[in-house]
Length: 207
Image (cartoon, rainbow, N blue to C red; front, side, top):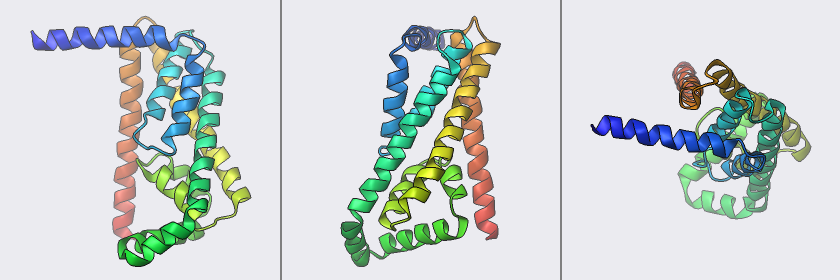
């Protein structure tokens, strides 16, 4: 009985979400959430872009618009995180001198950015928490702002395109079932995140 009740609640919730995501102003919400996610990693930006992609696949939104607002919000958010790190670098550096763990993390971030360069800003976006840590660290370690902007522009576009296309394919495949479309797209995104984490863990063990 409880499983049936849960299924009904979930179906009603996704049905409401389907109506919600069909509105034109849902694009503005995607942009805002993508912006906030750069500063507060628990904000579900990827989920919102996937939902937008599902809506596009079912004809309620335009796919290019979903990608554009997601990338734009992420770009602004990453730049804000960089500026926060840059403005607070003195305070963070002073705290790091009194906390060896902080100093170790700052040194690691600076070294990773120096060795791996811009591509690290792209791959970090797909690592839980990695995006914010790296963008703030880029500001703290005073990486060239122009260099940073170029790479996060590429990273934001790749990320938004990836998430929106997952939702779009799900929406197109299951046009008559918004719940299933969202579950398939979200499950694919979750599986990809797990795969990236496993590969990263294996590579770190061999480094």
